[in-house]
Length: 367
Figure 1 (cartoon, rainbow, N blue to C red):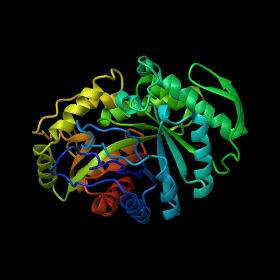
Figure 2: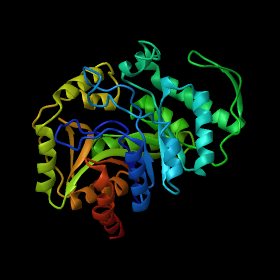
Figure 3: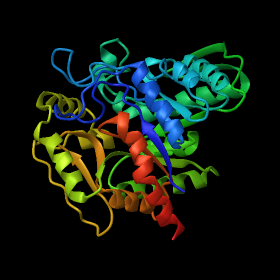
Figure 4: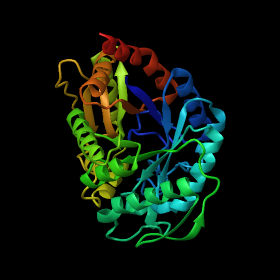
């Protein structure tokens, strides 16, 4: 059965680069209300995003305002009681021993609801501004870095102390106590061969994106590699949701956003992504971001998967029925039973999705 999570808007204006979509600054109150709404509506988890610098030329543009993806987790845990709170960490920005201690604290505070998403980092400018970019060869080494990072996390959680030395890290009888009592969910994003290998060997959940076939392949690759290691690792697919009662209404909405694309932000995003030759996320960002968006329903029942223009990541566009059919097939055909969802207007769309789409997915699964 498909489980749903909310990709929290911990950055200004969420995940649509348009001046016509809802405009807002990130705040604790906003993300608290979204998390409370998600809990009430039946979502499994909420997830923060790691971002330290956006794409405006003057420091006041798209994503130049962002909350810390781990710090905001603490108060969100206190404001909720059942929904899982998954926080992200930009791996080069926080030493794994510190991340292990933070995670142990949140595990205790949440009663076992905390998960940590280990973001390798592809955008040099985010980390170089703080003197934290690991080096020019980091893009080719980053999943080795992540593999070591999670190895350190898990060892400290299991034993409470560790001595370790490598190219990236040095721990001298490092203590992290108390250790987590409940267990921390580890999420590793990415679907390149190296990221799949890291997720298969170290993670509980692999976070992916793409069209239906790309996500299905990522799932199959993960299962293959994880089975050789004797592990069972879940997959969560990221999609934005633009939906309405009819296809025509949904298409009109996304095209209105595209017509007012934030061109400066789009150009900045493409320029940053050009520095990452391997990542799927970066490949998506290098697409032409025109202010005209084509929406093709190339499957008889499923939603269209739309990328480019004003959309940061792939979005599902279509009627409630088409969105439901896509998510049903993602679960039943591709074997991906978690989806991480973003929305144009979180204040209404989080609840509306569970009222209008989720019951249709359940109905299809019961047929």
